[in-house]
Length: 462
Image (cartoon, rainbow, N blue to C red; front, side):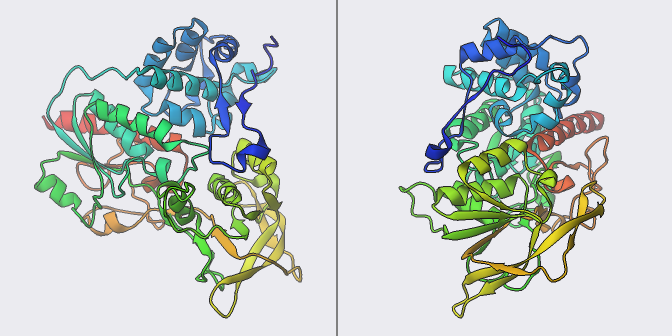
């Protein structure tokens, strides 16, 4: 075994997976996991831990894998994360824990994410559950939203002994994990549901179909329902558009709508009667992970897919792995290109898209070179469906129905960075509702930090 190189992970063949929604990455078996885990040198000062937003004891859980004691490995993970099987699949480890791995200096970093996935999958298959909290204090906390931030906050509070209820607007818990990430990257029944069930096993209650701000207000939860603290983890589900002509045409989707119809409403499953316009020639506008998800979903629904992005490949914000998979599967990349108009036929349907070539200028505030239009370079591409994947912002419903809750110009809730508390006493927030659209693991880190803030706040009230 070459200790400088990662143990390869098995994947579905690209020519087969474009015709199904089964998971692309097949993960490690026991022998492969033990071999990869043995590459970890068990640093005394593990930099990988500092790169993890939820500070998992990475050497600790990996060491148990080398010993073949996977249950102990899972117990270590469970102390730090409520969603190990999810994070092992969708976290950008290459820019977080693995980026800091000492092994990566002279070779490949340890495949921390794939090992986390292996441990969590093994525990699920063996029926192993996280340890139950020892003490219940009876104090009530409400959590708004069952996405990564909300589920993490709820799980942490339950472990501390709090009586926690999650209020979820949709009919299925999981937030972006169930509506935003495709089945081929994150199986819902096989992965997400069991991890949500693990949180419920800690005593967390989940009420679905409750829209806070409509069904009930924060004031009512605190004054009438007896919740002493509230965590807002409602995410950022409001899609952004370009404001170009033709965006209201039939056949133009936000990536959120397209993925929600396909994921939560199971449009990919022939046994479900969920309407979705698959499209014959689809353009996906954007370059992030959500854009890759939308493009690869449209491809599986039978479309010829082109991803249109205004910068070069070097500036693509999507994970390298997702870009690689999209290319393998046949998604075309039209880079340094920006739409300027969506063409519409006399029946109101998309008939094409006018674009303009771009070139890169000076870096902007994000550090990426700013795209600039090339005069006279307009051209038209043939499409019948356009999916806009330009990011999202928080829905203003909760701030608009909650007195004393401050937001910034981006509609994000303002919090105290140390405690997670908002401008409203006893109301905390975290995740995309505070930062705008970000990663699953960063939302989890925010939920974990807020749980500590809520615990300190309630203990101070005693």
